[in-house]
Length: 479
Image 1 (tube, helix red, strand yellow):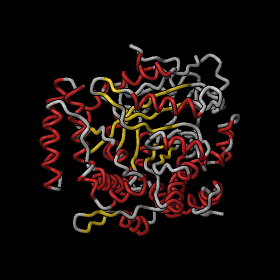
Image 2 (cartoon, helix red, strand yellow):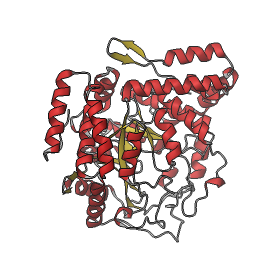
Image 3 (cartoon, helix red, strand yellow):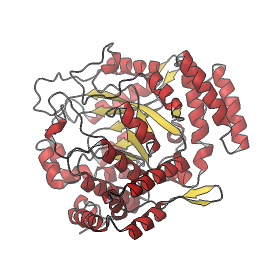
């Protein structure tokens, strides 16, 4: 029985409720009166300087997803753009993944790290190798990492992950520093989540892959990840362990996209109902080619147009949540999605263990093919050409503005007086320390223009002073 407040996976992601939702959506996909009512509910409500959004339930959003009307799609895109602008402005946060180890005991059929893959070289970074990778990432200009690791209690125990986090935070190379480490590792215990929290992590990220229980068990035939309930209930344990920023994700292409979309929103609703705060981020990767993995062997792939619609509806449904698109996607796809709700992207990613210290991009240990292979400088310049503000900001995490405190900041509109100036400060750092001359020229003009978009006059004056201090060699200012 469906119950968003239940702590049991099969009750807050109730299979019957998903099917009823899809049936309801199909029945009402041409009901223009209902569709207009849903769109009206989702529109931003302005009260003076504050902006509020109601979001949409999984049922309402599924009706919009089912609609095949071109005029409805245009309204969805326009609304997604409006909501993104209201809460995140033109800021795009940039990060990079760091793969620590590809040792894995699971049998996931869509991942080349699966235990039965005997020809892929297995590698685990030593602390010296972690240091070298981090220095390479700092030399690009990165300030925020998402660490990744296969599940292997012998090779990759929690102690190894914690040691790597400590190493990452300890490295200060030239003007470089990793200021936030997000963690994407297998579902674990409340005790281990407490240890991650104590280590100073940012967001704990765990992709569900698929919410369809029967498909999930077939796709994960062996290993601890086979346990659907343990995996799906991981975010509740993480929050119990004190981690209040969690990131959800579905691997689109494994199961029917309408099923996954409804269930993903149900998971977000569950977190809100139980913990009072929804997911900090939602990732929407698609199955990609890698080593012995052929994405065409999965018959639920989605085209670019459907993918864009999913991203736009995610933004409309959970307006305060960050949406992440990785380098799995091409420059062309990412460019379109920037307008429809994406607020975080990876840049210059290498998805192999030890890949950043290699001159040539390694292929033999990649978790998936990287479609967007541009340098970080090229990505920054491209974002600015789109009218976006590349942000390396980690201030909210370091100031304790996480979980419900971040959401409160976002919902009251005060984010403009924090995130906007912080984005400009971190962009200025990048321009001074890492940017090519042409990128620097474009960035300086952008910063000059964007200073005037900081609403609070006092904040604006402090920002100008901080920017001057950065030019004179000082670093790490934040609001």
